[in-house]
Image (cartoon, rainbow over the protein chains, first blue to last red):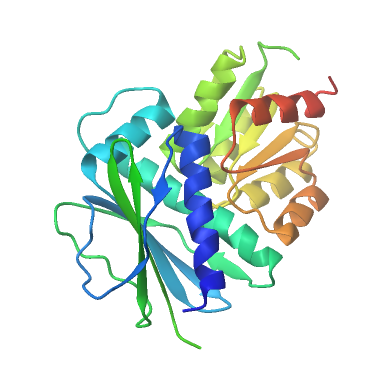
Length: 154
Length: 125
């Protein structure tokens, strides 16, 4: 997959979590993911159309997202509830928006749909495209999360 | 800036309404009302005297841009300052919002300082 499509999502993720949740995310080594089962317990997925069609997901371990949302809203959360789901949707939205801004700057136009959120151990993330799925693992002081990027091939 | 002004925060995500509300409170504002999309916002505008609208762009039913256009076309609401807070950061979006009468524009993610700075610009301080 074109690396130009991947990097904007990595930097957008780091920026969004740093600015909105005061959380430092360290980027791991990207890999090709085969299975649809999510790496995390709560995932946000957003469809993208334009230059290519595809989707991007962000899948958080439970402890990781509880701390992120606690930081975002200035209130402690200990269980995954509707507030957490809503926040994951909004985080997915912001990551997509920031990445699309960078992509727009290099001439790639994308529109985004409204994000959906899936919760539960071993849930499945259905990407719209059948193209290769690139997973990028991240680590935070409170646990890991992964973003997955999947676009139609040219 | 009058800290007692009534501010209408419009966003379909409760999280973002809470973040904006928390920041506005932190800046000293006390009278904050919320709407979950443009159509609910129009209902509130019809009954309450709102002094500032802080709105998202992408929302179901009536979007932030549609809300802005409806407000600017209505003599009762055309002068109410409008701050767009959105993930839509592409140049054409910003141009369209400004041409439609948006007073200022914030791209998510943002900090409390950004909101404070934009409000000062809107109210000429």
